[in-house]
Length: 131
Image (cartoon, rainbow, N blue to C red; front, side):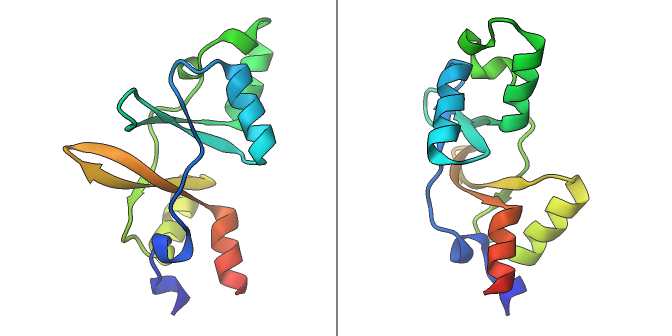
């Protein structure tokens, strides 16, 4: 049954990411080039530290004349909603609806830190629903 499939059964490993000190212009270009709506933000060791979305970039543009050179850390969200690799599609659907969000970051715990392994979005869920 589709609702019981795990997020990683429905989605391959891999993320698009940047670092906290990445300039917003560089992050913007990456989102446009890859046709994605967010980037996972990593620390120097590659652990999850935040997420930056198109909405965050629009906010930066509206609030700052010289937004392009500001670091991603100035506008990213640090409170990232995450799920374990074994989360089911139903669990993720409930979480997306409950939190009024469009994506969750799938993580693997390593030494008390979170390693991002995938991003699962409402679009991914809908693709699974129509298969």
